[in-house]
Structure formats: structure tokens, C-alpha cells
Amino acid sequence: MRFGQMAPLPPICKNLIYINVGVFILSILMRFDVSSMLGLHYFDSKDFRPYQIFTYQFVHGGIMHLLLNMFGLYIFGSRLELIWGEKKFLFFYLFCVAGSAIFIFFVDALKVFNETGFLMPRNKVAEISEEIYRIYNKVTIGASGAIMGLMAAFATIFPNTELYLMFIPFPIKAKYLAIGYGLIELYLGVANGNNDNIAHFAHVGGLLFGFLLVLYWNKTNRKTFF
Image (cartoon, rainbow, N blue to C red):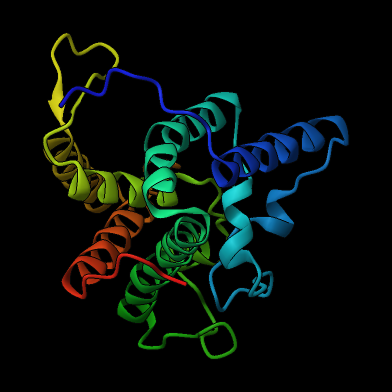
């Protein structure tokens, strides 16, 4: 099966794209850094708010960041929403958003514990290392984790669908794309450490949570959600 025909844009995907583009435009027009309020902070940071577990997906660091994520939402999300329906698709999408955030917390908490012996050392450690300072002050933004979850679901449901990527002259089956991308992101997350500003573990978390939920649905034969 070749992924040749462009899928129509269903309601949830359309509204998610509108919201993401709207937040991006408003942040430029109002000259307001929305990432400090809507972006995801470490759960023990003084700037963390529970709603950030969902709102960080609507903030993007630049036009290319936004366009790539919205293109992924269109390519993978539109097909999934058409076969799942609006409510099930929205639940899945938000599950991947939250799952990606939880995975980031998990990885960062391991780093904090390894450095300090505490999971929440803000008021217990007098001197915080550069690594811990970075964790407490970084902000994660973007819908990439959710898009990776959509990729995982698409690759599970349509494993042999052939996809074309920019600068690669031959098609790649969806299952190999998802596995390859996941392994690359895991490697970069471990190898790069603090050397880049890309949230590689957010991508890994979204991919993992998306795959696990689809696996659960397939195992329980859930054809409807509500």
C-alpha cells in the first residue's frame, strides 16, 4: 500500500492545527514569551503548573518547528482520526502528550536522583550542579511527542505503508520508519546530553506511550472507545 493520496483533514486535526498556529501567531504579535507559562517545567521547579502537562504541545520555538509538527499531525493524524473517530483520536493524542511529559519527568528525575540522592532536592540541597540547574530551568515545548505517538500508531496499524521522506529517493515502510526514528532519538538523547536543545526523550516517550496504547487496544479488541 502506497501513501499516495492526500487524506482529508478531519475536525480534531483541523482544530489542533488552528490552535497551534494561533498560539504561534499571537505570541509573535503580542511579543509575549508563552513558553514560560505554557511550556513544560520539571515537576519540582517553582515554575511548574499541572496544566503544563498538556499545554506545552501548543508552543513552538520557530516556524520550521511548527510546520514540521503540523505536517506530521496531518500525515498521520488525519488517517487515524478517520478510522478511530473524533473522541478516540483526541483521547489518544492527549494520552501521548501526557505520556511524553511523564517520560521526560522520569528521565530527568533519574538524573536528579543520581546527582543528589533526592527526587525533589530544590529545598534539600544547598549546591546544585550544572546538570541539575539545567533540569530545573529548562522548558520543553512542541507537539513532537504527540506526533511520534501518532507515528507509532500509524506504523502499528499500517506497517507496510510506504512513506517518502525529504532527501531520500526511495520509500520507507512505516514500521521501519517508526523503529528507526525511535532508535535514533534514544541514541541522541543518551549521547548528546546537554549538547543540543532538542527534547529527544520527549520523542521517545510519545512513541513509547502511543505504541503501548495501540497494543493494548489491539489486545483487548476495542473497536470503539465511547
